[in-house]
Length: 260
Image: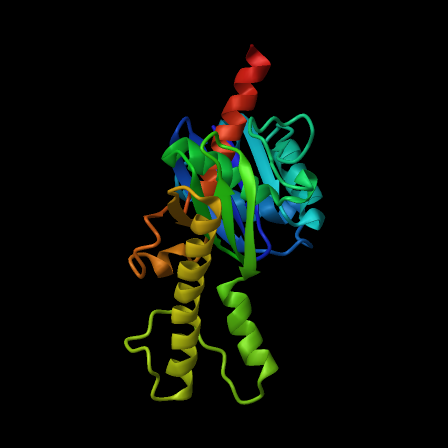
């Protein structure tokens, strides 16, 4: 079985795959100060609820955009699961795609992992919209290459900034309001966030398609992707587990390469 870890700026997600089957996935708030011991206590409790034990794990892979978290996560894999992890971004981990941007080494691991999974599942060219700490719009070419994209502030970042930058504005949650025109402060803020991001998605996608000059599918992923499901016809597929599937694919292709 494979332990896959997606280390993001807002949440860490841990998942166990048995072959192609996702046996379980669990999220925790990002905290780079946690130790391998703390992760192990938390993770084994949750794994146990699914009938999973540490000795069932025979491989591990990590994609991280939080450098400070990498050491404890790698230690978790090597010390408690007995396997040194594959770490996306290291030279020895082959992705099998071209990265056609000015500075390939500056592209976040999560964006490349999403590219691989999206092309494998949906083909290309396409746009992957990831609703995470940032809202990213990434272009995947017909041949699976990563060709750059757009980065915007994430939904929760906008909500937090709303609250902290204006003394009288409350902290509201991200949700789809019943009306566009709010009759009080909170519903007006909720509408601005939700419909503002819908307009952002529609506008950015339209401009990207025009500039790219070819029909493109649009796939949404990330922790808040389900919030925007069916809210706009621009988003054709919502796939919350895209990053985990990409990690599985990378691990599988690297394992096959070692065995060749």
